[in-house]
Image 1 (tube, one colour):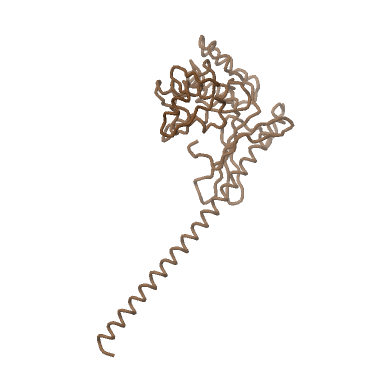
Image 2 (cartoon, rainbow, N blue to C red):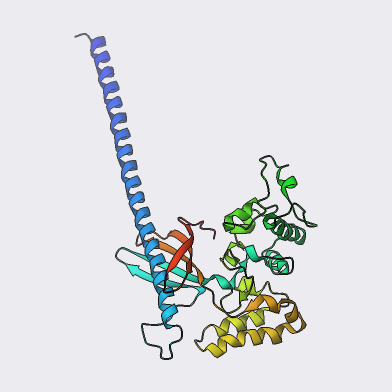
Length: 324
């Protein structure tokens, strides 16, 4: 074999080795990708089931609360969970969950919103950073969206506005079925509803509970809802929230008296919208975590208890939007 032939043979060998190395590296990369995908999928499923365990724990705590909320003697390990949104935790093998219970009576019932109670929603929007003009548009447009007529309020919108949009649709002229439906209403953006950055969205302060009352239970209302009451101050809200730390019914009833004294003349304006009665509708938010992951899988549900500890889901979202 001549020198030139040996050179060609060497080049061919080098080309073949290069191709084999590329194939081997591609196979290794694909195998590694598949392995990581399987790992992430497994952990995602684990976190989902841990979150579902948190939901079931929340339902158990609500049933326990219903049976024992009037007990006189408080037994260790049998404490009643609060329904004002505070966090509780549970540990399972290779993971944990966090859950919160929220009595929907502490939130603003959008389906029961009226021209009179609209001032509370407007204040909620203003406190979350929405300019006054936009807040007026949103409140009036929500009222127009759910009323049965085609007449729009001063700052509202009916079908004629929505039909002029690039993707036209009609105003519903009926009650909301989900809070996410608010995104169809004039002026409501994902940032306003869900929040963004340091700004909290308003969705956590709203509800669609089955009853037709707009009454807000001040003993479980989030601070954002309390601060939306005309005349409310940080000091009054602090006193009301502090009353929740005791299981003394007299202390919880005192919340209304504290608000009445603190609001002065403003109390007459909003007293019809305030109360201390619990509802039968609760939101449960649970997040599942594996031991190796800091980011959890969130689930949010709303359940309505209908007597004899029977309940039904009226809302279930998995995964829930993390911005909520």
